[in-house]
Length: 279
Image 1 (spheres, one colour):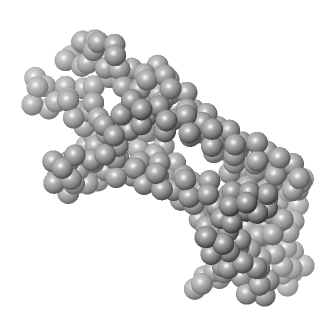
Image 2 (cartoon, rainbow, N blue to C red):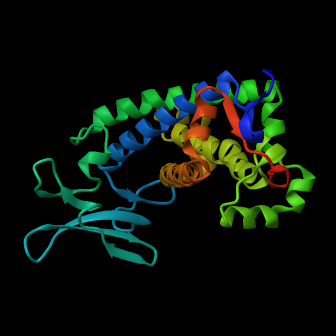
């Protein structure tokens, strides 16, 4: 591992991310973006969710509804247990490329492709799904063999004992300095660990369960509680990942985007001196 490099003002340039972590990170990001946009294109074909094996069209668990309003204009609604809200302009009814309000579950500007094309959406989705799986397998294999995942993601006992302090520091936007900045803090570990070993694998598993060829051999849908349950769980996992990415990007911006992006592009990260070491 490259040696640390002292900088002016007591700062220290340290090598934080090896090449395989940086490469898989950006491939993962690109894959997730395409999977999200193409997944929303697929959702346009039937914007409703169910539990169990079969779809009971009259009793969806949640749905994006398109209907005509009293003024003759398309209106959109989102329905779910305890929820029935007007989503016109975003879900169920949105303006097309010509500026006209049209009945469409998801706006054209956030689907891949932009026009309604289920076949193209599936092709984009399936290709990048396998790229995502292979990329994730590479990340896990190299991380486990090098024991980097164990070192970086498993919280230490002393970190767990100070989780309240870490939460308070985050709420006050006080980021780690000195030696503490060399490793992920306990909140980062308790977030990354379930995402890497829980949310991402479940999303892959539910995706495979919806494949007739795979499910015919492995019966994954039955294990998960039915094909429609797998589809609903797949969407919930995707929503959870979107939430994780939004928070992750927000924290990168608050912590210093130049330094954070440098570490994920070059591997080098600048550590500020601990407060007690600052003149």
